[in-house]
Image (cartoon, rainbow, N blue to C red):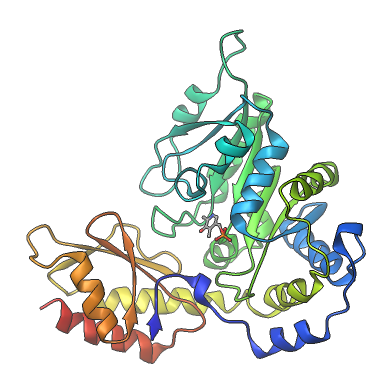
Length: 343
Ligand SMILES: *Cc1c(COP(=O)(O)O)cnc(C)c1O
């Protein structure tokens, strides 16, 4: 199968498997797993933050960040296409009692500065307290688009002026940094917390890391335990994460190259449109044109019959994600099969 549904389907490399087998481990709830500690330090230094916390998933990382920044009844401002708003099962509200205040995401993944400004509450006995602004980079629902440093800086300034914190859902922040050819920490200046995924394009089997100031991470560590996310000999997993950070970051450029190539191969197809801004990184978003007779379910089935898996997006759209399990030959085959299926 050529699996383009997501970069989460990547399998661990040989080197990861070896590192996992050989990892020196201890009880991480006691802070005694040297491999977890090493991963947390490595991650924090890459993000330009003081400290890191190894987390089972990106979803839990975002949840822990929100619970650490906000009290019950506080408000968190985010884009209406944010992963945390759409794909995290309402966790921040269900488990944290946090009010989500959404503002429209623009097509490029940013949010209008004035929309954020207007969403920040003044002090009034009637109002919830605005505590947090959450951004996402790369922005998944907006097409895997890159959020640039100047926008992030302006949001950080606004947050600081108003006593708010900024959280970055950086599940794919390395894709953004590689695309921009800058160190990832440049995208996090003044950002209070960031979560990134080891288990997407970086290929590790499990895990994300939440990074921030030491005091923030100390509190986050208690919340991770409260949520049942304290793991014991987690160095087995962290070992793969270290290999991911050391060997898998630069190669994300290949995924971007293949996504671009795929989009170029499909551009002449008359029954689909490639979505605006796509692809900037490792995601190609396609939409069936309105009067094309086949349903998207039918297309997905026919692709599957030909050994190709793709994701859906909105009602008549598809998401095709490149990753290190995908080769140039695969991309050529996908274009070939799509040409037949989309007759
Ligand atoms: C995948 C993803 C997450 C959550 O990651 P999981 O590890 O699947 O829980 C969070 N934010 C974004 C933007 C993502 O793409």
